Amino acid sequence: MRLRVIRSVLLILTVVVLQHSVLEGVQFFGVHLDLPLLLVICAGFSDGRETGAIVGFVVGLITDGFLLTPLGLSALVYSLIGYIAGQTEKGSLIGPSTINAALASLLSAFGVIGYEIASRLLGFGRLLQIHLIKVVLVVAITNAIISVIMVPVAKWAFVSKELSSRPPVIRR
Amino acid sequence: MSSRDYGLSGFFVRPRATLLALVLVSITLVTVSYRSHGTGFTGTFQKALRSVTSPIRSTASSAFHPVEDVVSGAFNYSSLKKKNAQLQSQISALKTKESMSSQLENEVQALTALANIPFAQGLKTVSAIVDDYSPSNSQMTLNIDKGSSQGVKVGEPVVASLGLIGKVVSLTRSNSTVLLLSDPSSSVGVVMGSSTHVGLAVGTGSFSSIKVDLVDPGTPLYVGEPVYTSGVQGGIYPPNLPVGKVSKFSSVPGALQEQVLLAPMVDLAHLQYVKVLDWLPSGGG
Image (tube, rainbow over all chains, first blue to last red):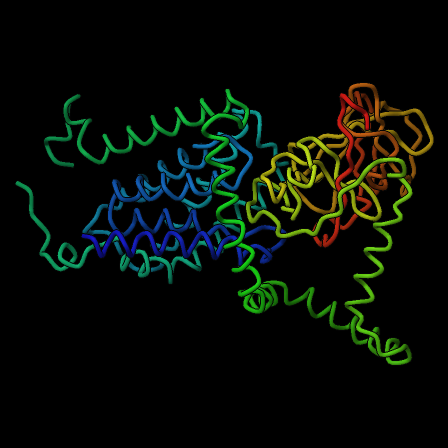
C-alpha cells in the first residue's frame, strides 16, 4: 500500500514536471500536449472510478496552482473525467490498447470541452471555436497515441500488486 | 451493476460518495477562490505553489532543454525544414561578417532595442527576462524573473521592443505572471492608426492573431495599418503603445461592426526580454 502511494506520488510529480519543462515548448499546430489529463484518464482505466476521481482531484489541484482560473476548477473537471474513465471497471479494465486509445481520445476531448465550459460559466474561458476545435483534436489524438505508454505506467503506479494478482471476485 | 447499486442507499456506494465529496470540495474551492478574486487562502496556495515550484521548473527547463528541442523538432519537422533552409542562406551571409557570436549579437540588439523603446519615454521601467511560458492550452501567460521586491505591481503593462505584450496579473516576491494579448480573456482598448476610430482588441488563443471588436462599419482601414492603445480615461493601458497591424478586415452587409484581425507587433511566442512599465490606471504613471 505504502509503495503504491509512493509510486503514485512519483508519477504525478513526474508528469507535472514534464508538462512544465519538456513539454512547455512543444506545440503541435500551436497546441500543447496535455499529459496531466491523460494521466487522470489512465488512472481511472487502471484502478477504477475512485482512484480516477482522487487522482483527478490531486492533479487538477496542482494544475490549478499554475493557472489564473479559480482554484478547484481543474480539480472539479478532472475528478469527473477520472471517475468516468474508471467506469471501465477495475478488473475488466485494460482491454486492447486500441480500445484504451480510443477511450482516452474521447475522454480527453470531453476533458478539454468540459474545462472550457466550466471556465466560460465563470467568465474565464473564451477560446474561439476554431481554436477550441484545434485544441480538442490535437489533445485527443496525441493522448490516444501516448496512452499506449501511459496505461501500463499508470497500472504500475496505481494498482497494488497484491490486488492485481488476486483472482477476480464473482458477486452473487 | 450489482443489486446494492439500486435505490437511494445504493447511490452512496464508496466510489460515488468519494466523487461526491471531491466535487463538493472542488465547488467550494472554486466559489471561495472566485469570490475572493485570487486573495485569501486560495490565492496564497496558488502563490506558494508557484514560488515553491519556480526554481524546480527553471532547473527542469534548463536540464531538459536538449530533450525539449528533440521533441519539439519531431513535432515541427516541416517548420524546422523551412527554418533550416533559411539558416543555410544566413550562414553564407554570416561568413563574411566578423566572427562574433550571432546569439550574443542578437541579445545585444534585443536589449538595445528594449533600452530605447520610443513609446515608453518618461515612464519608469523594470527590465525582466522571460523564464517560461504557461504550458496550458486554456491560458496564454508567461513568467518573468521580476516580482514585487523589484517594484512590479499587478495590472502594470508589459512591453517588448516593438510594442505591448500584455499586463501583470499575478506576482510573487521574485517573479510575475504576464497575461499575453493573445489570451482570450485579454482585452485592450485600441485606436486605429492616426484616425479617431476605436475598438477593443481581444485575444483569440493564437499567438499570431488578435481580433478587434466594436469597430464601426465603414471605418477606413488598410492592411498593415498600425493600431495603438487608446488610453481612454479609466483604461487599463497608457495611450499610444503599439499593439499590432491590421492583417485582415471585412464587413458583412447589415452587420453592426467590421470584422478586423490584427497581427501582433511583437512575436508573442518567442520573447526573451521584456519591460514592465510603472503605470497603473489610477496613477497614470
